[in-house]
Length: 461
Image (cartoon, rainbow, N blue to C red):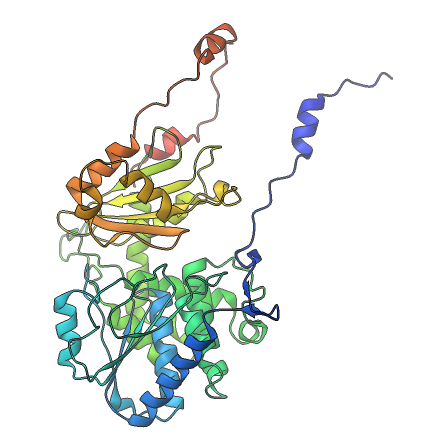
């Protein structure tokens, strides 16, 4: 019997392995003079933070914890709260301040609200950092900032411990856990799962806990990853300010309830729980997650447009919910192109007259050399402007991390930024490319496949 000829090209393609994607912890950490890793932050800053927490607990004076509203920030805040309790602080001496929708701790209204609670110590966690006046206008108040967002500038007079220059960059919950776990023998058992929840909230639930990240084997023996990840999704849903129009039910007797900007529910649920499973029993959190999942699905089918150079995919949505980061993360894992680097999701419905946008590195671009830097890329586009666009966009442009950034800018300025990117414009064909394509054009039969990208983006949720 004659051997059938084989398609060598098809065979080689079938055997070709996918390009490996590097793990988060694969990056080389900084080293000291003896070659030991310097992580997750400056050793001096960590020791200073520990001294601050000890002093705070011993004083029994009013302490205000100011966490961000996502899983990372809330878990970090609860780690601080439990650490202070272990160190002897009275529950009555501690309070929490949750920043309003669309605000930052640097806004005068928030500074006044924090000051009105008469704290002597303020611990700000995961709020992002920039040059600003003191956290509150009171020289007698001591402030500690624990953060991992990229910044070299901080509020005046504050003690700072930042992970942003110590790769692999720890989340705020992980940084807080590393600061606190040696202050009392019970911290590891009380807060290990909180550290895992906050870290998975920012870095995803497929994270491999390799060194220099701590060994979490015991944590995952006690608390399943499934429970931890489900609790994370509840917390991140509860931060969403769904003020969508009420939708009448078919019986027209009652309207659907929508979730409010109710971060206090998530904070109180975390504070009261002793495990992620207890968080999962909170009905208000469960209701919020169902509603957010529906909104994400409704907004996800928006079709992207690309920058002229093909490096940035832009999705535009209009939602009162903070779903733009979720959608950016989702599409960053799916879109593929040899040129694509960044997925940008712009939300015109979150704040009046503003565009809130989130950027993520496309999965296909994670191993590029040099590495993709979202903050640098956004600033490079803005610098193409010959006027004062960067100043007009303000301090909330291109904040966060090199791998996950975004901003909050006025609508007019955002459109100018899109014009500089040349979003929607076709790329210039290389010289002679058009003639070559015409010469080699072949007739291709129409694909019978029905599940296409065009159909997907045309779906109505």
